Image 1 (cartoon, rainbow, N blue to C red):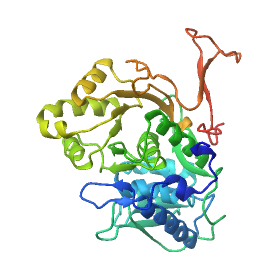
Image 2: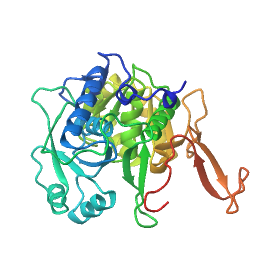
Image 3: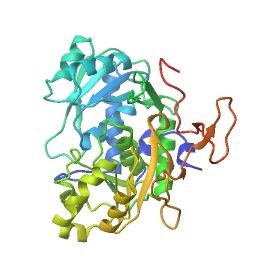
Image 4: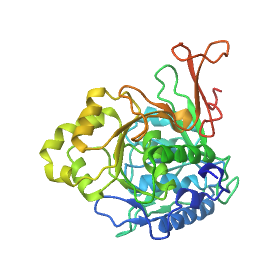
Length: 374
């Protein structure tokens, strides 16, 4: 039985590790265990239901990168549908995304008074505030705010409920809204975990933004679903990367090519941290990784680089190169890694290798369709 086929229990699906097994870590913070994360999920569901937010409701999350962003996404998704947004968005961008998604509430930091709050109040959206208790383990939070109105449905979300709402980049047209169910996310996390051979001894160093599908699913959910842990940084910083590498002691990290390229020149300046690093592999996705950069990463860190291909509509991973002794090919995204992937002609015929057509996919991780633009 695969992860995506297990009887549905969100708290245990997202944090299946042993009670005291590490789940969420962060710089200069004590570690949150899988047991602690399960309790946080249950407490957050209860709190949101009390405030009038439940299944079918949509909650935008506008928080800086870090452990609370990771756990807020997981815990809020257990009660409602989440929409993580870039905290650097301007007023007009926030107005578009909040309106297009149709959020019932927005979750911001306890002391936040910026554009996200101003726009939400102007649109009549309830503002909830996330507070971090002093001395609490990484990722622990409470939610402050007044009642909104009775939820449509209370309790833990179900497999078919929408867990995550993200917009496409809009490079070819107006950004499209992609709803992803809990089943989609669970399947994708399982696919990534299987591709990378993730287990309870693994730890991911996350430097990816957590308002993006890459960081949310590849770094956070795939780790937690495998009973592993993730070290949540406040965001990418090439100057601090090797410090985090030393503190976190990760077995892997995932990033976009520009991040890898920014990290490489710093390696020679951090020989001690580099010598101590015990990376099992490095993952790259979200853009094409130059073959020369792949070679330099492997020579510098002494581990394989696994390039993968993903998209929002597939809850991230579609294809991936394989860990040794499997095939890795520089300049290639590898073979399908979870969903079925094919090339199709305009008339619906599946094409043979070497023929040109449209890439099509299907599988348990694939969205049912764009919202408002199927």
